[in-house]
Length: 248
Image 1 (cartoon, rainbow, N blue to C red):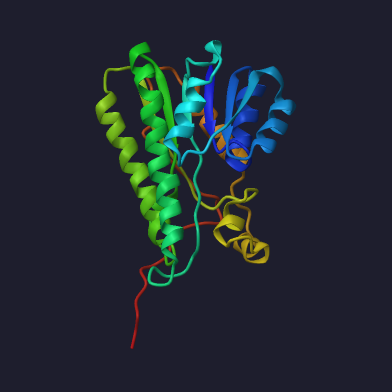
Image 2 (cartoon, rainbow, N blue to C red):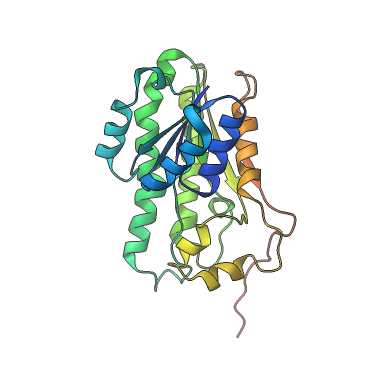
């Protein structure tokens, strides 16, 4: 099995690469940070292929795919993992640039990658797209604004892929985690404020990147007639809040 992982330089992506390679599969490690994916590839050996890729650039995606060695081109699993959240301010205070970046990465980058890889899967009659969603795509919260909206897009796009792919042998899954530590997610969201990021996980036992990686691996190794439409995951310390009511 050949798995193509975007955002493979850290967090979920690096954990997924390790799980697939440790179980005997090959992984294409795609990310902007060349030094990190090169280091991960050295750790994983000849079953890992690092490629520098920016999902927000169509030209970068096309160049990366066209530059793959011949024996790495039949991608069995595409994991659209690259994504980010920026800011937790209310909608009327968030810089528009943060919204633009999230949409470009979480939505445009994901669909561009999918469109680039999908035709070959359909032609072969097999393949799997795993899109990294979020509980934020299903449940709103203050400060989630455009991040949550991008993940709602991921959820609906995945279901619409399923509608189009019936009978082709190609599968699609929305993998939607809740609170997850051990990644750069909150550090990026708070623009490098490590103290603010640490407070998100204070006093909790969150999900880990390995939890998400093992789930992705399970999805990918199910029998080919089984499609998991959506998996939503939360740690046991996370639950649901009541509706917010503003009282006079």
